[in-house]
Length: 172
Image (tube, rainbow, N blue to C red; front, side, top):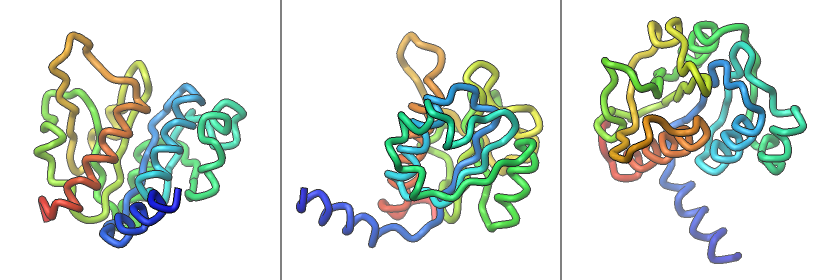
């Protein structure tokens, strides 16, 4: 365990950019809890809970998050556009993760600086209002025979890519 703590300290020293999340009507509390846990692992500071997204106190979210919610800030807002406005006012660039025609592959997206990743509902994805105010829309290429990923899995992949680009010195 000591070796893992040392390795994580080394990665924290290499991490300068701020990272946040916006959850646009994520309907399943287990997904919210899983996202919270991944967010804590990748050094997310703030999560905007938009619309009908379950809060971190929901029993199913707490069960999946395993106490990591104490490491993050949360703000409930009425809509994704309100969450995006709050994130932008805090200095974040909004990057929506969505399978959409204008989206760029995630690995080609310039993810430098302070980023707020926005993810949407399990069935309907990011709302039109969110996509309209996002600075960039990116998608995760999926060469397999499944058309989409679970929102919690997609969020973890996107968080990892933001940090990978930062640590590799890309895009900035």
